[in-house]
Amino acid sequence: MLSRVADNLYWMSRYLERAEHTARLLGLTLTQTIEQTPDAAAPRWERMLASLRLAHTVEPPHDAYHISQALTFDASNDASIVGCIAAARDNARQVREMISSEMWEQLNRLYLRVRGTTMEQFWATEPYDFYQMVKEGAHLFQGITDGTLSHGEGWHFIQLGRNIERAGATARMLDVYFTQHFAANGEHGQALDYLDWVGLLKSCTAFEAYCKVYSADVKPEAIAEFLLLNPEFPRSVRFAADEVQGSLQAIARVNGTRNAGRAERLAGRLRSNLDYAQVDEILADNVHDYLAQVQRQCAEIHSAIYQVYISYPVETVLAQ
Image (cartoon, rainbow, N blue to C red; front, side, top):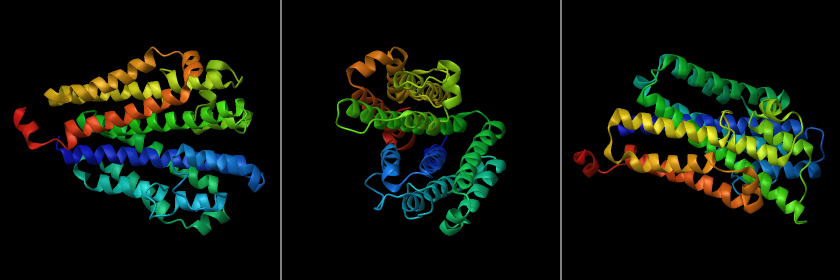
């Protein structure tokens, strides 16, 4: 596969996953803060911005209206929902011949619906319904992709993009919540309440799945174990790491690439760290350092994918 095609498929998937994740967090935070005073709602909005790594990119005031506008409709903001979906569509447009017509039609339809909505229309009606539409549009695209695209090399690059983005996003959220949790226990922060922890689970669409494993007894330690180490839940870090390793192995088999080992080794190292980790040891040691390491490993895997498959020098091709 041409490196340009691999790059477009990879980033199409990452951008769409990012848009869906942002929509989920915005919709949930709006719902949680709808009846709160601005002062009471402020910590939740700040935590949401920190989870998206956007605390310093959104201009004050950090209230519901201005954050929703900046992260939903600001086309100049690459991290906004409009910006991410536009970027996903642009990447898809450049590889129209490599994706199914149904994939393109769904992504284009989602793009037109988002671009056709103004902030005034959004705020005057039901904002949550808009975010639900974005989430459902992304889920539908994923289903169409799995059902209409051959599960070959291109499909695996799409899975790579989605799961690297997902692993990093879940690790960041856990880092933000547990850093605040331990700061509060040390009397240097505001304690998280039951709704905050339920909000973390719902931010990963994990509340029902968590309850099936741990019942409705919401405990920080159990949440960390579920979202970090559960091998069966699609948005856990461990599940995403398994998918990343599997896709890299499948791509390497197709390509017969000699120097693909580094990306596979990095993915294997991340998976091993998660396979053999114990949540009580992680929390007792330094959860921030552990989650920061997970995020660094995701970034290293991304860099290795680029070095091997996308931005490799001519000498590498000649040597194969």
